[in-house]
Length: 400
Image 1 (cartoon, one colour):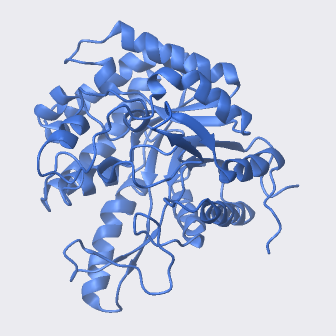
Image 2 (cartoon, rainbow, N blue to C red):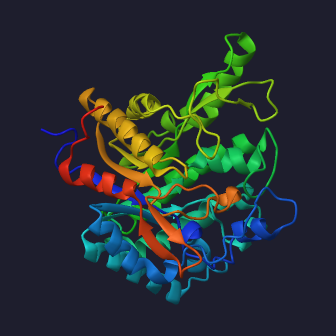
């Protein structure tokens, strides 16, 4: 027996807007080009994955990956309300066929942060018919591409869509409203349920699940004010989704995404405190705490579904730090497995250095570098080979 069981899936993740390039018809493109927003860069050409997907998939497979997570760009597939693009749908059929031809298992995300402009202009997730409109898109995708989607992630990080976009103003639509962010969180859970139903209308070809980001939250101080905020944020960011996954439409698996331990503080204008001294920080300023992944996997297991780590990684220019981070967090997954948690795969964020939303291209999350000055050349980092070794052997290197 190794550290990981036979059949455990190994891979990495991307999202369409972060790698494809040229997604000009969605709310993120508008946000990037609107004066005064938090966005620092234009996504521009991304890393030109829209044209280079086949060679990218072949590279990932050569690095030991047995699975890959990617997203479909809704604004390409449905460029106007109820108007579905045959060309875009055919493009994604070619993409998913190329992925299947490598032998990698596809995890296909239906909504990874971006919305068509027409949907955003109509109110986005606050529109009265938002869930029904999203379900219409999901039905189209399932009917046209279902046999190429063994795993479907309905909504990526719904709590972060709500938090960043409707409370912090860090993502589109750039609002700061204590009431609306909770309303959107509630709406997105129901969007997940609707997406599960929509995908299942095409048959039982796909396993469907929600992909949630679960920071390990803690109060910054031992006082009632901090504990009260901790309870509130834990309820909105964690409990709403894990405890809310009930009923026949909850899905078949749960995607767990973990990056950091995070301290809450009502005295902070952001509601979150800086990490205490002694914690290593990433390029994003996030506190590195590997055992937090083991802890949130235990919490996620309470939902009663099989788990896949659908994102985990570090933003750093120092690839030796990425290797240490990778091994430490895989150690946390291995520990959770020993403790009885049903974890069936690990997808690293991210496959490539890419566009990191409002932070632009500065943070480096990728196993593979991209040289933007040399025709987007792909350059695997030492961490890519370290990951390949674990994937191929199912074993972590000896400590020390």
